[in-house]
Length: 199
Image 1 (spheres, rainbow, N blue to C red):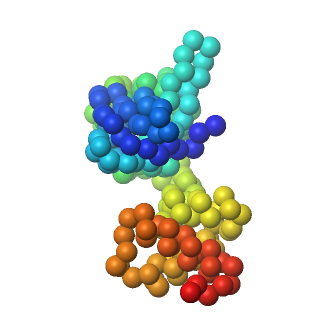
Image 2 (cartoon, helix red, strand yellow):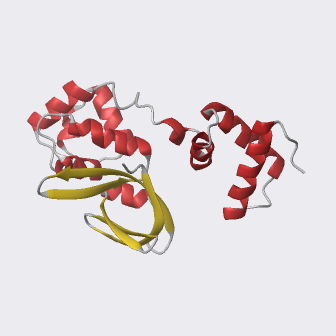
């Protein structure tokens, strides 16, 4: 239903943040580590989302990267870990440390994560070893991920879009930044993909 929401970060709190977009202020549950990776309050940010919906509850969860969201969803597959537990686990250990601990079978490191007991840590090792490091999150791993995604939505091939953006960036130089740079990169990439020399 939602892939991501881009808007003005109006505030952060212990359990998440508020994001203002199109006149609506969203209240998202976001791990503390993801909050730190996102821009500060008062600046625009993009949050990757997942909607939790039950008969008696609806909650929107947010993450700084697609891989963080994918990790959250993998944690939910582990017996005994629900959305709140997964959020707390991800707020207490970085993505890199979590992957390293799982790959090394480091039960002691996992047990030091707040809210994660020995039994649940053992279940995580059994269920997730070798999985997180191999997660494929698509365009997020490519340069200019947002622009690649925009081009893919227009019908272009993902890899071709990334190559076209790299070509456009090489011709643009470093004198342009911000929104203008994104606009010119997108225009240049479309021209490249269409076989048209940009004027």
